[in-house]
Length: 326
Image (cartoon, rainbow, N blue to C red; front, side, top):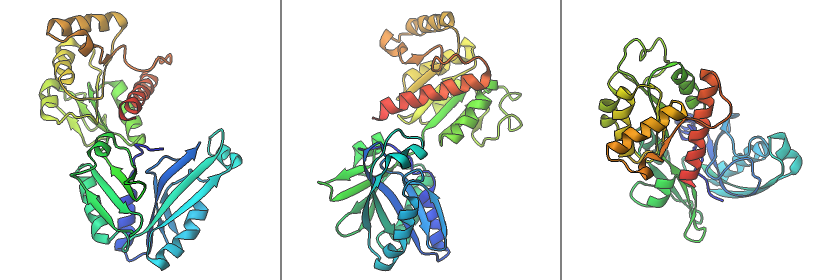
């Protein structure tokens, strides 16, 4: 099984510990069977000074993995470990049944050098998609930005070359570009960050788009079409239109529909959405294009207040993301 699981900030944590001279092991889920608690690509950093961050099983086998870390440091070689997760343990982390997990342990400073880890962190900071490629036999770890294109596009980690090489994909983060700094946007920003997405808020109205209302670095006080034109909208971008005003939404929609954004959603009733599609079709966008616009926005969960609507929007984005990636 492969996955587009994000490794969160585990490489950064591993580097910070290793830079202090601590013995560190990077644990990565490389294969799963059955109802495994974590997906392929999930990572955990383990310091022999008694610290750990991240998870490879949601709590089922973490202690066992930590206990193997010292041996990994001593041998200075990667290790592949396989664990079975019992039904009882799986139930304790919210799964109906158990499965199997295969975990790769890499001693930082050996199979993966400090310099390689620094470069990985730098590429992640600059939002450059990168494949961390490990030769299972030799333990050699390399970073690739110019190969494994299908994996870099899909974000799926997994084995290559008849299971001789494991590729961990570090994709640029999923961005949620929110047009309209309204009340729903405040909740959507908070939820997006919890889900490890990268929210951006666009609004030309200074009374709406300001740091008093949003604890967020990426606030763009500009007209939506101007701001979207300056952003690099790619397959890792979702666009959410919340202004409910055709003067703002329509120019933004033109740019969104001409982009590779994996999700486009717009606030409004069924009647409003029908009128919106008609306006877009009069601008030359065919039915196949306007079908990309999710409206009324969000999963149909009976949401009635701004926070609930934000939940429904994020849920729909995640659903679309999974279809898009997998």
